[in-house]
Length: 256
Image (cartoon, rainbow, N blue to C red):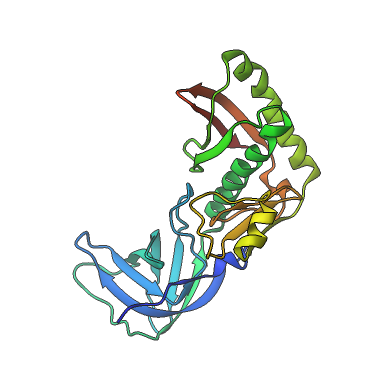
């Protein structure tokens, strides 16, 4: 029987760290990891340049909590990977479809990931403000070990040196002012209007994309988690800019 897509509850409330769900299936892979599939989840799976949430799942009626070490999505189904605390050897817990569970997302990790992801979008917004509007957003990596955003187009060595500090100053000026961050699933035409009149080619015209807006700036399609207000990013540090072979990469970090 084909499973329905997992409902992504962080789409509705990106700050929610606890919720309930229903167990749909439990399996164990060749690597020994257990995998839980639930009808809905607040855990963000790795993807879109953002690492997975971690945390725990409490299965009602079972004393040993399930520690979530990784979360992945395949064909709309979210897999929560991990292990049962204090269970050793080949012992398999007895889990039944339909059991109620409680989800708990690790708060410090979620907050850091959301700050890094939001900071990447803020840098996109700042580029035209410092005269680099010809650069088109491409790939991004919002992992704590070295986040960066990449753009199609190059700039000169002199521009890299002169715009480096300008970009950082502009981003931090917006953080000081603050502004609401929102995410909505919208009809294609309405989503395109909020994104400056058009959407990337990978967004299908019959789809209803999720659009994230940083303050009053144009939105962009995104499935990640973000801060509730720009001010929560606290501070951005642009460490370097590299530009070659038709691509410009901006390396950054967020600081307390």
